Length: 330
Image 1: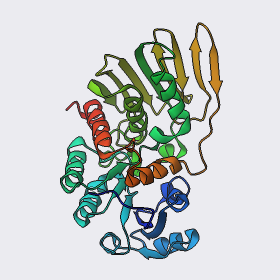
Image 2 (image 1 turned 180 degrees about the vertical axis):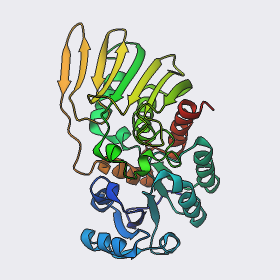
Image 3 (image 1 turned 30 degrees about the horizontal axis):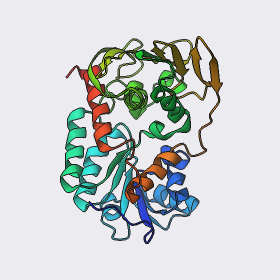
Image 4 (image 1 turned 135 degrees about the horizontal axis):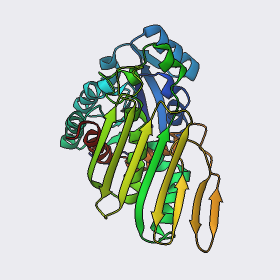
């Protein structure tokens, strides 16, 4: 597909699934990005769809995704529904021939992600996955340190993400994020993909990975504890532990090199730190109000032909493969 000339055309976006993630995190980013316009939203509940459109100053609202996808006045689609419906909607968007951004993870399984990827690749249609951390300034700074060899040859990376059970977990009320039919390993599926995708961006593709998953608390049908180990194509080793029934929250990543280490959090806005024998650097880099802003701006730059977007269908597919290797040992 040829690059879109944004200098002479405003790209009009439509959102499928205007839930909580789109209220502040992502939706306004499409309104704030030069050359983009958020022109329509869809939610199965017509009243909620219309309310969202009214509150955000959006021209059109739909309760049927087909009507939005096939609207000739909509040029591109952002799919922000739960992962189990990404394939269903993604294939419709590919058939319509429109650029698409899909929320992460790309799909619940590698198999479904591959089907989505191939549908867009066969038509040469741009496909992006909302792993927006690849575009955030705090992580681009980490990548600058790594690319400049500030801590020497990288030896290994480790990540521990632990959190207590939430009030919703303890209440027993339904939550799609802990329904094994939608997310086999619960919060791991929703959260761990962010970090694993980021590690690939920072350190290169992973060539082998394995893991164990278990339900320790019995609060919901999905598993709540996961451990994994992996090796990058470069020979860097990695380990991860994700537990959602611990007493204390921790979100800590450590990258160890031959000359020092880098530490940061994937989700918490803690300082990023680099330590060597010669110096210690600590930086506080805040996220933008709309955390997907830089991700969406980079979509524009990609469509202009100015850069390759850091989170493509291909990179999202690789992350899906990693997740499947951990969860299902494919």
